[in-house]
Every structure is written in C-alpha cells, then in structure tokens.
Image (cartoon, rainbow, N blue to C red; front, side):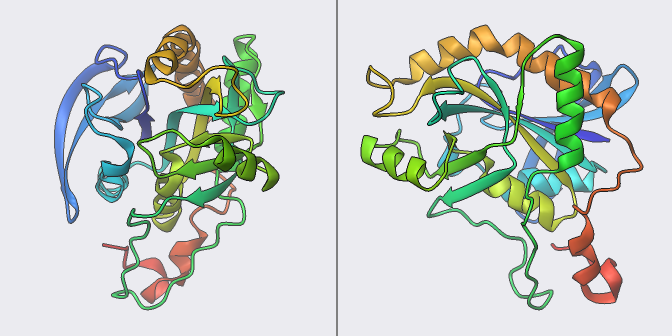
Length: 265
C-alpha cells in the first residue's frame, strides 16, 4: 500500500476508486484515512490540514498521521507541499523534489523514540528516498512536465511567513525552498522504516526576494493553477514504485531490539 499526504489544496474525495473513510487509532490519536485504489494500486490518503484546511502547520499531529499510515500497511509515502523559493532558478509554478532539509521548527515532537526502545540514533544522511524521487521524475517526464530532482528544504515553525532577514540567512546556509510541513514528517517516516518523498510546488518567491508582501490568498491562487499537474505527477508515479526496493530507508529497523521485531510505539 502507498500513502499520500496531501498538502494545501490537494484534497479531492473523488480521485480514488472505491474510496472509503477509515478511522485508525494510534497511541498519538485517531486519524481519518481515505482508502481506495488507483489503477490497481492500493492507496491510503491523508489530507494534512484536514478536509477543510482547518489545521495550521504547527498543530498537525504528525506522529499520529505517520503511525496510522504505517499501521494500515503503507510502505512508501508521497507528500505534496506548497513551498516558497529562495532560488531564482526555481520560480513560482516549479515542481521540486527536495533531497535534504534544514530544520528550524521549535515546538514539534519529532521522534517516536522516547527512550522505551533504548537509545536509537536514526541515520538521515539522505532523508528523502532516492527511489521514490526517481519514480516522481519518471512520472513527470512521461507527462512532459519539468521537475527538479534535488534541493534543500528549509522547514520553519509557522504559521507566520518568514522575515526577509530569515530568508537571507536560509539562503546563506544553502536553502532552496522554504515550507512548514516536511519536518518532522520525513523524520518520523524514516524512524518507522518507511520511504518518503515530497513534491514541492513553488507558489511564490520568499520574503525579501519577492517584490511584494506575502499573503496566503496568493499561495492558494498559484496552488490552484499548479495542482492538477501536481496530482498527475503523484498519481502517475505509483506505477513506477517497485515493491522490491533497494533503498536503505528501512535500515533503522535493524537497530531495534530483536532485530527490528519491536517497532516504535
């Protein structure tokens, strides 16, 4: 089963065949998952901000979402994310696949390892699954859409936008994109041995780079115009995801007691 986490504007109850809403209980809370199929592939879908976009980024129950997807049998997660650009080569309307992140969140619980499993240090050398990114590249190419494979995603706490000074700092540190949701999703996915990739949809140039002040209405407007192609890239990549993956995303499970037989709670 493949998991999809839809970001801003992505929610559409009709894109899966035989879709049913399922309530999955986890240690961290209950999660509504829409489960169905797409061209024969089983899919579990979560709208990150809720079906009515009512959950701000700093209040998302990231641990419940990722744990729920794991419990229903998901092995790979594709997420969409609206992002601002720090890179002149990535203008609004671009599609980008981050391969690295810088974490500037502050109040989020970003791990399942709370000491009950012992001390576990999860490798994050390449946090975003290379094989999932290649599947997204193949999907975009098949549809004649340009996509950038590789960039650094700066994750901020939100819900406010960043200051021009912060954006300048992020650029000096090597950031290409700025958003509010990829961390801790990507970290939690790796801790459970799940493959994870984010399709970043550039909606604006970030503060101080943009010639105008930022507002959420403009983000939604750009998302609306880019969303159908983003959906097509994500859904089209499903046929390129192999069950026999050779990536190392699940390697952390070998560090758990009894060779991984005990999963993080």
